Image 1 (spheres, rainbow, N blue to C red):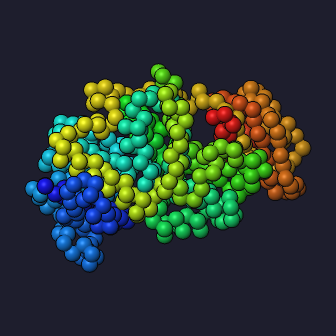
Image 2: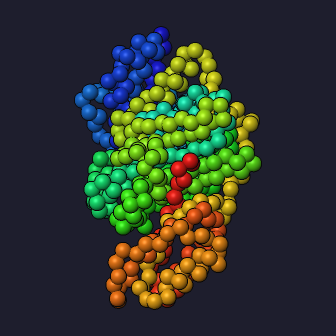
Length: 435
Ligand code: HSE
């Protein structure tokens, strides 16, 4: 029977994970697919020689050699970033190759162009590894949950940010030191600001929303805040309130509009997502038929991500063998049924808030601050101040009842303009027990 032959562009962390996976699972895949699934060619400008175990694989520095190779069925793009990844994907598609990628940044910005090119050339696009590392969340949404209207998505989608927050919470470890460890473990993006500023999480939420709702969601649609402003004091307060701080991706489907936001959130310890720790990801969906579903697993790393890329290769390989290309549409909905989203404005979001205000400890400051909250109809639940320094600014922590985001933003602007306030106020949204 015809072999399924793979051309790989990029032999970095995930690329070598895919190569190792296909080698380790060679016999098992033969028994499952009925033919060999082999890595035939690698293109990598940084690699002069492949490791010994890949001596059968041809190596080139020019991706065009892979596009021109008539034996290659599937081109796997694992170089990351926008260019030349976008051009490589489009070139491969033009050459009639099926494509697989883990490139969430690319898909959340140029996904529409790439998916439309694939439809026009009747090839498949696999992107399981773009969200949730080794967790088969894309396939589950497209197939296992096909008979559902997805009503909400809530997830911890970035292993690096979760690893940092977990170690800050459990060990009191400093932010910068933990970020360095995450980089050494191979979780972090080439530009780690993508991890800590919430951008990588937003890339992934855009992809999940696109296939959940059948709308082309773009990175720019997602309101994104990162975790760089979180200090040990916030983590301590969260612990006192029975919460953990998590960087959450949140989308609720309101029918004619959908929420799309990424921000640090205080999650009650009783909530399942509060207990997703380290580099693990957790993704919770509510479907109108299935109700609640939670996916949990390694969200990053060489072998888990290699597992997800290999799964796409096998899926496409099976479709090639059975002559059923695009049996399952790449974005779950048929291409002609995919529209544009209407995003709920952030100003319309409501919920309870944690505020950390940094101010000089002078008589009347608290009453001025509470006056501003009251003016904007924000009801205060409690106020805490741990220490008193005559001359130094102190942290005043305020918890609110359910408030409106637009009112919160106006109130913070006024508070931060007070001469007694010495630093920008930090706000963290609090997840309610029943969310
Ligand atoms: N930098 C990403 C993370 C890698 O930390 O989750 C997986 O997408």
